[in-house]
Amino acid sequence: MISYIKGILDHKEPSLAIIDVNGIGYEVFIPLSTYEKLPIIGSPVKLHTHHYVREDAIHLYGFLTPEEKETFELLMTISGIGAKVALSILSSMSVDDFRRAIAQNNMKALTKIPGIGKKSAERMLLELKDKIGRIKAEEDTMRISEAESISEAVLALMNLGATQSMAEYAVYKAERLLGKDARIEDIIAQALKSFGS
Image (cartoon, rainbow, N blue to C red; front, top):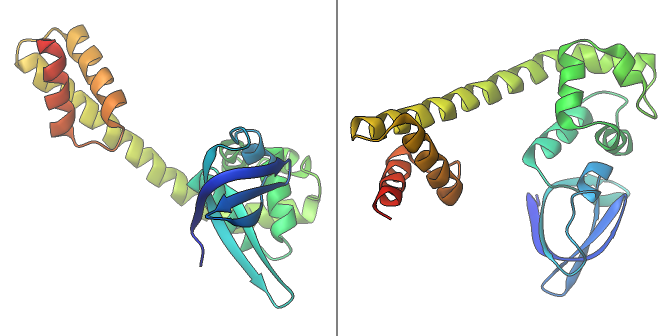
């Protein structure tokens, strides 16, 4: 399976991108949400892909974020929802709006999507409610964990004599420099360096 594709954006249109990877042009079908965020032609790009194989066709579907890909794959598990309809859903609303519509049983929002009638919307609500709820709970847990790490870093700096506002700013700068996945020890060390400069 092809998990992602990384190369130079050679061509783009609202439903399709061509990515040049070492002289080979990969045609990747994309939702409108991905198209709107693609860089200019000639720029490097990475798309998370779903490799779709049928007896009469092989296609790549690409997404800028893992969340879009995951939602596309969830949609494909629903009977009666194929790749075209799944792309149409992701082109019509953001992943967050779609997940919110499922979590809140918002039939009206779902039936506004081209190609989705009442029966398809009911099927989505029935089959995805538990899955979407589980994903949302995992994401919320990750956000809480990140916030707790930031609080720990700020407290550690305050224990070393920094004021709260100084500590918060230093941690903010360190996190931007190192990235959200950085370990708390590295964030604290980087924040301490900013006090010295």
